[in-house]
Image 1: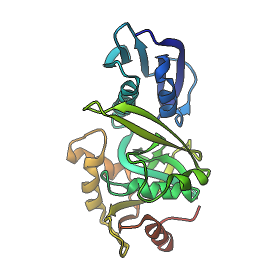
Image 2: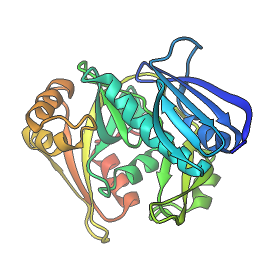
Image 3: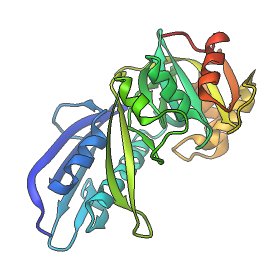
Image 4: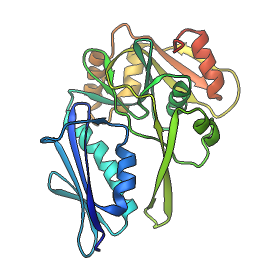
Length: 291
């Protein structure tokens, strides 16, 4: 498989973890550049995580710190494997210095807002709405909490599994001027080609922010009354412990969330069927400031 070219070499950092990606396979270049486009550039040096994408006569290989992670003859599959292993390797590098919480994070007016919960809860829709309203982007998946009550950026590209987002059309997204769009294709476990759409926000934050509010969304899928109610801190910590990417025992997760989330943090549950109505409700109740 002779598909070598001029290597692509990227240096960046996520949560103060230095990363280098050296890609010697031209067929992977566009996908790797898109997947890494939003991360903070770093000086060349001795990275903690050193990824290499190379090829031989039979296949393309992905390795990190000289350990082979994946082999395939499909460049898209290698890009998908790189994305998966990048997130896993970075999360493992932090230990508990930073907690990686399954939450979208946006910022404005000196504070960050977290939308946290399991997949399908509606957190990414609310985060996207915030970006369209002028908020700064931190993450839609990995909110990095420290023990000073702040959240740091992990600005991976927004990804929608469907061609049409349930709340925003592609034309609306592009017309906003807030995003650029790209994609890459890869075979799934059955060999069927899938397309991953990558939305790249332009308004990025490069600093950590004090957490000002935590919202636990519950997307109902039905139009109707939006319900916003306060949540006891103890209840929220129990719900969020399984959403820590480091996969800690429940008691450790609850303890660290209690330590890392500000003691005076307002926490709310938001049940909604329409993201635009829900957003107006959050504004009216002054949970979210106008940017």
